[in-house]
View 1 (spheres, one colour):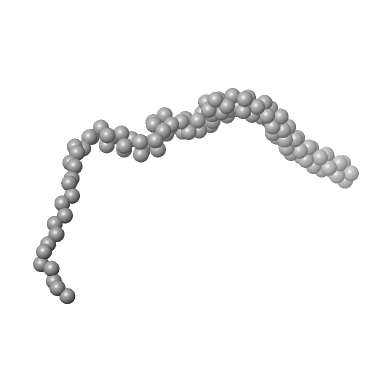
View 2 (cartoon, one colour):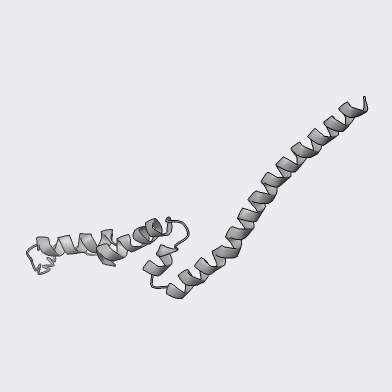
Length: 112
């Protein structure tokens, strides 16, 4: 085998472009906000905060789901009655147990 003493030089042309700081800023902003901008990034947060206000379902209205917000508002009425009635039943059962125990004690005291 013969050795070749020749060297091959490969020259690749390089295009040098200036770095645009505005383009870098736009790219970083797009990456930070997931490409949806500042409003798109914070919209779920605002919707969540509005939905924390009880009984009004403002998060649904904020998302322009007015029918769903209205339906859930109407749905909460029987649920609220259920909770209120459950609370009244619970308090009544406490009072009734106390009253029955008092009557039993009074009857046993009268019999002795």
